[in-house]
Length: 310
Image (cartoon, rainbow, N blue to C red):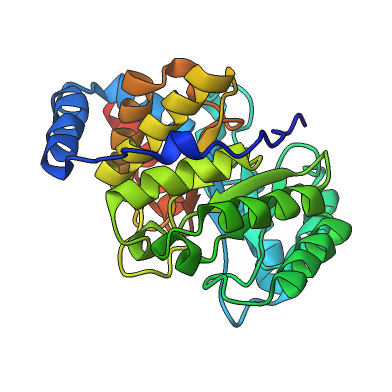
């Protein structure tokens, strides 16, 4: 997999950042509301399958074991319990990745190898003191290296939000660069901002820019553990940062909303917003993901329902 490389830190890109939240909310409504209402059943079915293939199926529980990670991988590979559902689907759709703690990466690798899906479903691992990020940098880097050594192909780091809240942008950039280096040149780096703990929308925009300058392949909204997680307005702010970075560098950086995307209609709103801002080329696993544990349940439910109507 091609990975992003850091560029020199450019403080000018963080100057004079202002976000008009009411305007952002209105823009989200204009971009999504009318289009969602016009979705036909046939289009709804296509959105369901697309959402499935953009999902990082996740388990991040304290009681995770090898057996439930194996079940997670099986569900990622075979999302529909009724095998007849595959009859009218081109190919055999599966999720983009499974996402687990570093200590469970080896379990996921064994399960996917047994399923013959090791090169089809990515193994993502959270790292760097998830979910707080408030650990010594040395141990956070060691956690990345451990997960990579165990077989992770994607690392979802979490930033130290105190650096955002105190405006220590150079220090944040330097930390993420070291995390990029710890991942190596074959493992994708997704940077979790923890938007509910960044203080302001302007800080979300600045943190997005710093993360991309430092070599992130994706910027991700949340750990799913904060009081506020993925919302469409914060997603639009992050999209504006991605657009600016693309204009500056020509590099396409991915977006991953996580936490709060629980239904197919939630997912459709995000996909429509991506299509209307970044373009259809972003609606592929290399550039857009959902971090979710419960979305797949609604995907299956809605797929059966809409298939009966068609």
